[in-house]
Image (cartoon, rainbow, N blue to C red; front, side, top):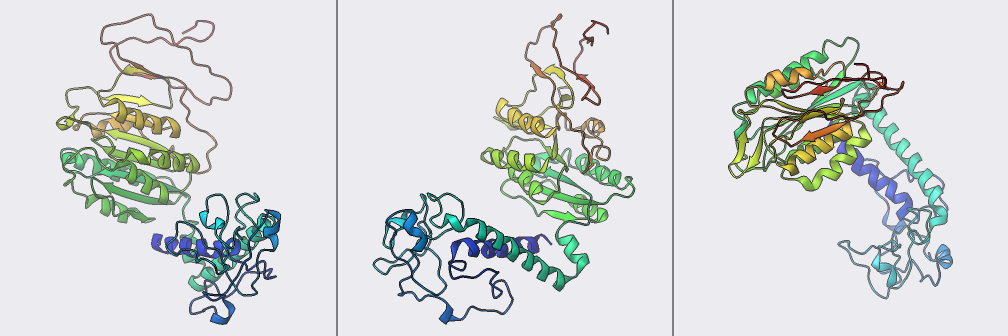
Length: 424
C-alpha cells in the first residue's frame, strides 16, 4: 500500500506542476488536461512545441513577461540545474524566478506560476487559477483511483480505516543482543494492549535499524502481522557506534497518523544527527509523542552498558529533578529535545531492566487521535552535583487549564511540594 501511495504522490507532483509550469492556462484552458495521468494515453506530437521551435520572447520588464509566450502549442520552461540545458538562440522559455539562472539567457524571463510574487513567478497573476486547476486535477485523479480500486481499498489507501497508529523503532545492531528479547516482549505487549481498547482500530508501524541498514518497514492494521514481524527481529550487524536512529524515526513519522505514539529502543547515540530538523519538523506537524527507552551509549569502547547505574528517567509530562545521565551530552541533548517537543520522555536504564522501566508507559490510555489534552514540560532540571544538597526551591506555574500534575523525582533525596500558601 505504501508503494501505491509513493507512486500516487509522484504522479500528483507531475500533474500539479503541469498547471503552474506549462502554458496550459495561457492557451485558454480552464479545466484539467484529461490526457495526463491516464493509463495508455499520450499527448500527440503535433500538440507539443518542437525542439527547434521558438516558444517565448524576452521579457524587458516584469510586466512584459505577461505576454512573453509566442507559441500556440504546449510548452514548459527550462530551469538551471536540470539535466537538459536551455538551448541558446532559439527563443525557448525558462521557468523563471530568482533561483533560475536560465532566465538570463534569451528568451529572458520565464513562465512559472508557482507563487504570487513577480520576482519568483513571472506569470504570478495566474497563480490562483493554476492552484485551483491543480486542486481540480487532483480531485479527478483521486476519483479515478477510487473508481478503479473500489471504496474499501481506497479507504485503506488514504488511511481512513484506522483511528490511531503506533510505531516501534527498534535498534537491532549486535550490541542489542542482551536486551533484544525484552525489547521484543515489551513491543508485543504494547501491541496487545491496543487490542484492549474496544471500538478503536490501529495501524502498526515497525522500523528496525542499525548501520548501515534501516528497515524493512512494516505497516499494517493486522496486530498479529506486526507481532510476527517483531518476533522475527534479530540483533546483529552495526558493529560501529552510533547508529541510524534519526532515519529510523523519520521512516516511522512518514508512515504514522496524527497524534501517534512512537517508542524508540536503542543502546546508542545517533549517527545521522543531521536529520534531526526533518524529524523535529515532521513530529511537530503530526503532533506525535516519542518515548525513548535507552540502554547504553556510545563511548571509546563503542557502547557501554549502564548496568551499574540505576534507572534514570527524564519525564516531560512532569517537572523533574535528577542527576545528569551518563550519556554523552550531544546524544542526551538530542533525545531530550525530541522528547520535550513531543511530550514524550527519555528512559535510561540497564540492559536487564527494560521490562521494568517501561511500566511507566501506557500505550493505550495516551493514544487518542481526538484528544484535546496535551502533555507539556513544566520543569526539567539536571543536577550535576554529586554531593548531597538541600534547600533548593523550584517554582512551577499551575492554573485551572492544567488537567493534572504529577511530579517525579529520581534519587535518594526527600521532596516536598507546597502550594502558594506554603501548604504541603
